[in-house]
Amino acid sequence: MAAITADSAQSQFMQLLVTQLQNQDPMEPVGQQEFITQLSQFSMLEGIEKLNTSFSSMMKLQQLSQGAGLTGRTVEYVDEAGARHQGVVEAASVKDGALQLRIDDKDVSVDAVTSVIDPAH
Image (cartoon, rainbow, N blue to C red; front, top):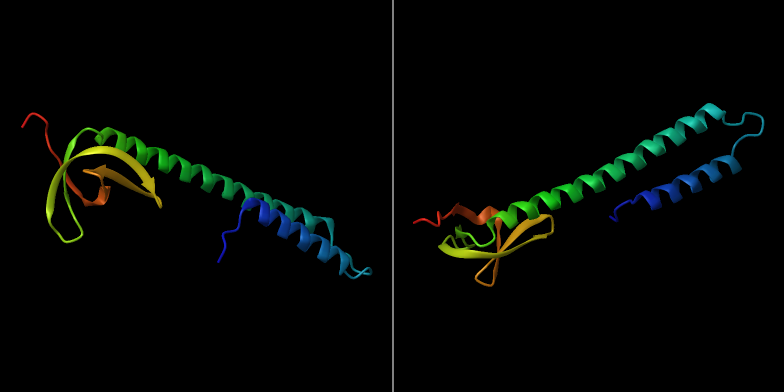
């Protein structure tokens, strides 16, 4: 199922509104209050869509900030087979909404990191 964007929702709303006007009973037209209610509901949905987009951007920025804090640090992580490894975090990125660390030319999920090694040891 395709995601509904604010633009496509607005287009669908306008098509529905025009269809509703074309097919209304001339003896019992839809009242102005109903149109105002529908418009306010649409505006609310559009605002929620924008808020979700902003929230996603903030989450991505927060994840990148966390990853940047680990860059240059030695971490211990567990691979898919359960083996433990240590390596230096070379870079951080967000892929499919999840923070990925680049360690020894491998992408490692931050969820696989079990500890950050103190550089004094």
